[in-house]
Length: 350
Image (cartoon, rainbow, N blue to C red; front, side):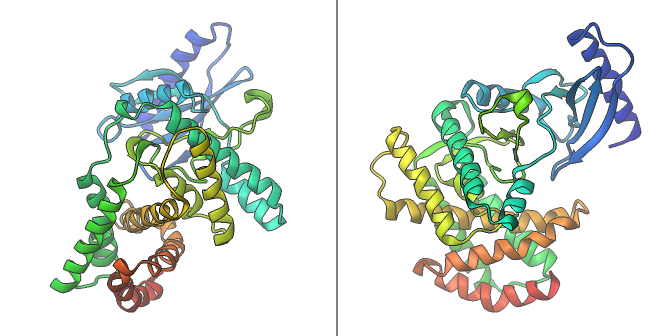
């Protein structure tokens, strides 16, 4: 973010705060909280005991109108999305609720190291309950559909950015055909699932532990980074949460949490006529689609955006893909190729 944009954001935020809180004195300070994998930057604004998040979202790269619209939809569904107090769409500035600094990931890592399975279960059940609230409370017709072309574009990032650009693989025509066949299979599997509202990046870095004093004693997670929401496969967000690129859990735990979702979704009438075996297949295949996408995105963040920190997360995503992919005969040729051609080069470079 250029100094001039930060200065403009500070001026704008102070003007908004004077309208929201007429009794405040002096100027509020902006402190950088974080950036993310996009072009947005987040700043904490403190003044007279109150605190907010000011967002710089350059309008050339980010659509703040969509952010505000999705935030409103999520709040209407009863989940904890940050309230947008003000937005300047021309400049790309927003002032939001401040959900604090503790992401789910940090708490989960601490609990994992401490062996506190009870608290881990509580956090995941809470996250799944909020996910169910999104799926039940956000009308999918108010969201753009997750089209086949978009699913394929996402998966093609694996070939374009990871295989070709990062690994420098010179793919033969038969290899390209094998990849295309796999993408077609996974895309069809995704589109055949029941369609619901999908957050699209529902994982431990986009869920927040909320301050009890400010947001009450319920264990609902704060939900962020939701602006890419679509209408899509019912298992998409669930597998994003449970086969998380940033933290790994034993398969027994993952399956238990997944079946907790299934039980709750059935009892609420959200989904019908889906047996456990079909659900677990849907869950697995959706995860494979997302994992190819994530591998490609992490490579692109390194090559195009000069963000190398995501490279360290690729090995876990590859591990997920190979462990699950080998269960499905339709993917045997692709998994064999991945193991013998892609994985050895990836291990040497990562």
